[in-house]
Image (cartoon, rainbow, N blue to C red; front, side, top):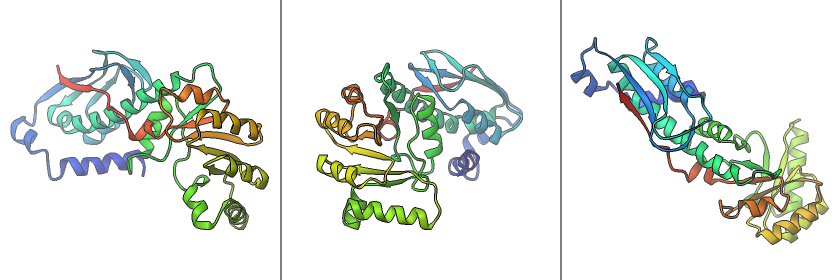
Length: 277
């Protein structure tokens, strides 16, 4: 779903057959102006989305961007101004705020995790733990917060996880099946496999046929041993239960990537407010 389609569906959900409060209280000819004000420190994201929201509701509205997406903001910063028919501003207000607050919350927590990796080569990844139909926006927010996107969906990478292994009957069978599938369908897809312990890792190293190995729920000592065993032959990814308190210790093992589902599914929205002036 494109961003334009997301906005259209969001308006359909919110407005229904009309914004009856504004229609009943605000004169049709009323003009107004409002500002988006930051209420807490963070990283602002969604300015362009807000512009598109107000454009969708009324193309005659004047949108003045004062701060760019991905910028650090502080309390009382003014991000943009919107001017035009008051009813139109009111119709787009909550939708613009909902997008921006969530996206800014994601970018803010991503920037905090990313800061923990300063000076190290390890790269921070998101996951597929996103809000249904809002993945495009949430992953955009991760990138603007300094992280990187893992895969967008089930279609752009082969990722063999524990349930796949258990269903198919083990590592060797899963890798062989993936290799045959890629060849038969003439696909250009990277293959990542999840291992749960060092014995499984050793089995993958003997088998080969993958591009990246995900080391799931390893402690720091196990991660260090695993990275040494792999020895740069494959890309490495740490995943599972890694927090702000532990992420740097994991990164110091030399692992290439650390994926953190909490970037998109366990966040606090940034406090923003649209106020008439």
